[in-house]
Image (cartoon, rainbow, N blue to C red; front, top):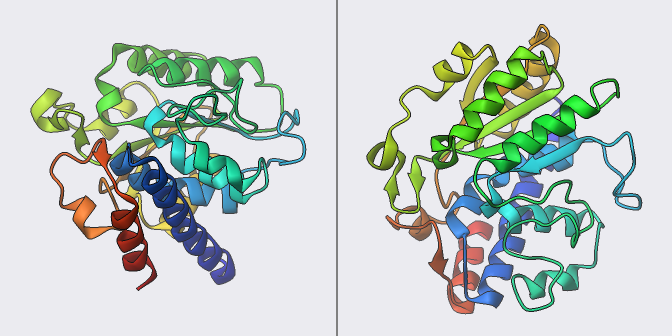
Length: 272
């Protein structure tokens, strides 16, 4: 791949992590672990893959992104602000009263958010609906799922419907960080081989290191070129809290307290 693009995506991923940590530090708490595990994908989508226009968030020919994993909202807000969808000053209002940036994404409040999400599994269904409604148009619908979210039956209803109807411009990602609110995904409800399960439903499947921007970019290109009329899924092996050692090593890091001082120290680690 183009070295310049790879460097730009890696730099953007770092900028997203720093921006998100500032937001959490300002608020004092948040879904830090799941935001940081999905950051590299968000960087690849907004820096290297997706077609969009910050001056016209509803541009008909844009690619769509639905984060059914609602907890990644702060990472997406960071990308949208840095790309010019809304002022950076909005980031200091995360999850505060009257904000345009609620903890979970809301398309009625935030420019650039294509679908309101947060109730697990519902983003999966709405992303499929968006893809089916626009299948004659020249764009892709990208869908981010959490691994714990894959416990929801609604995810698998979406999976069998997408394959049945041959929705080939739907590309899903599973943030497989192996943790959810109450423990590891294996302890709470083990899904076994997620990649094999999607394949059994008729999807074109790949599994990559979710923190390798080049691997992610190449997997998306491969999905576009080799789906053969099927929806695609890219299962990303990730680390919850990726990028900040103490957060990675915190056992329960789904939703944590994060003081301004801890955020500043974490940013120093990222800049080291």
